[in-house]
Length: 97
Image 1 (cartoon, rainbow, N blue to C red):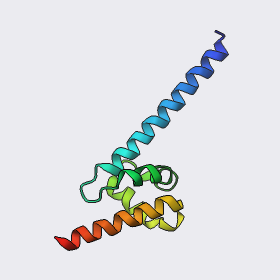
Image 2 (cartoon, rainbow, N blue to C red):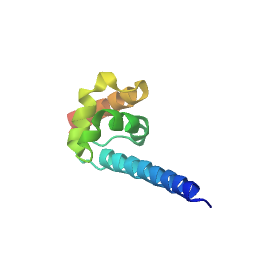
Image 3 (cartoon, rainbow, N blue to C red):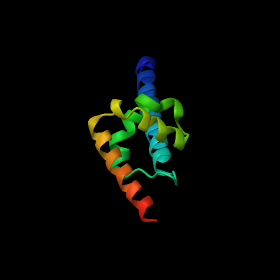
């Protein structure tokens, strides 16, 4: 293997590992909050939006949540739909208590 090729392979592996770790961090941040638990579907649909709009708030879960709600109009349509549904379900659950 040439040195250039090794560098490219290593760089590719580092990038993939970085993306995987960042994805895991967002999933962990979005799923581990006691005050607001996003559904698995919301995690899947909103991870890209969380990185795009709220990366400066990671890993502070309440700040990520507030940021996503603040930027609701900028969310992808799929993320907005599942977040609205999850927020409505949470509101119903709180009202029942």
